[in-house]
Image 1 (cartoon, rainbow, N blue to C red):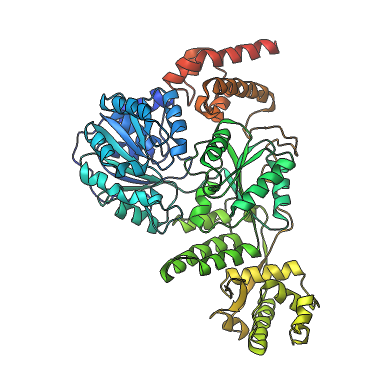
Image 2: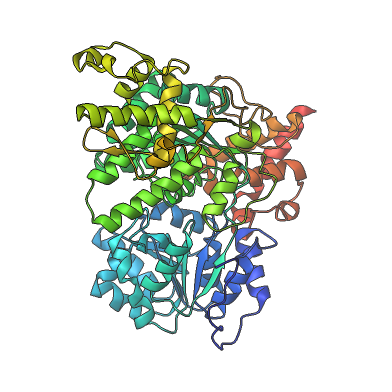
Length: 632
């Protein structure tokens, strides 16, 4: 599946003229041309063909089903797992003049009856449904009583049982093709390996689908992974130095860590709210709503948060714990910079992450096949963390995309090339210590004890077990404690050491013998002491707390841009919708640069469709005129 793979001929149908889709794009959404694969996907679906679409977050997936739903006769059914976000998605479409509705468990009987009546009367262009509703005969009967233009299955990776976000309800969605074979289906996801891609096709029953795969590259995101050294303080420095006042998401592995991190940030002047499955539904909904509607709010969350978030101005995504897979990492980091502006994917990573994830796999539920698959996912994630090559290139290669030969120039390993060193002797010392404990004492210990022995530290535990009598005691004084922990971390990442049991003790692997027998060299990475700033030229302050959006505008134009943002914020408050529903920052930037003086000129700006022009045109021009008058 390199690029676009045609797996079957398109159905023989009368093809709607291409101009219909383009006219709809301009009239409704305010854009003059499609991006990348969008046009090919839309043409195929409008003509009645099934499609499986892999397109990165921010790549414009939603247009691939919204425009066919508007061009083809009938109502488009959108299957989405994101009940809490349906209202915002529908609000955004209604702001464009699209007749959209949703049905889910948050509505009462009367609200659902109104939507059902609109649907049956042909008064909806798009209807959003949660996958579990399609298990109900009443929902299927309702759909059968109206004309359907297209079935869109969003977040289609949820069908993959080996994926990072499996949802059992998705397994039943193959019935759509069985019951309505004449209606085109489009399955969309922002991330999937080739194996997951095949599983999506198989489980949704779409063997005749045409596959479209856009580039996974998000060049505006800078990927950075730093060694852990008091990670909460590292995070605080990162936020205050580079993202003061910016909206962002911070991911932690446990609920406890989420709560403590949010509390820590609040105490240090950064407005942050927690989000995890242990909070009651009302609190989660409030925090999510605040994140979508307020500018500059930080959410600290488990992986329960983020899928389907349409907020375009998320300036950073940070990880304080190692994700379980590259797919999960890519999906989560992809929530930054949907508007194409400079953004950062930052992660603090350390030895305990490796030990903990290995232990979770070993001690977790599932059969041996499941553990092997989980271990292979973790191995790929560790390889991304430990690479000395371009980090973006490694990420793209994981998804089967050929990386550039020269590196990206916008990740930490490109900005500050890591040094490597011959760590063979150091590796032999660590492995020998593990061997001595096992063979001479029949004992197994974790990293702390191994490092204390190598450094010759007579800690209470070393003395208790007479480990100062071992021949390896004190043979590693050429490295510091932090450096030895780095050696152990990289040996674990390379599969030369393994973690065993509840207490995370270190044991040898089959590969260890080749190092101890001097048949294999071990090359290790030296962590750079300082990483180049992500946005040194973006005009950020050092902890002022004021939001400065990363837009490429001349300094003298920034006041007008901020005036338009203030006007937009007021409109959003009045209407109770997120600010980006009014206009994206990219649209405001184009308005500032173009300086339209009439409604007609404003209508030529990207992102200003007919409905928004009619609703907000005079207001925008009023801000421009007022600002121009104040400068005279």
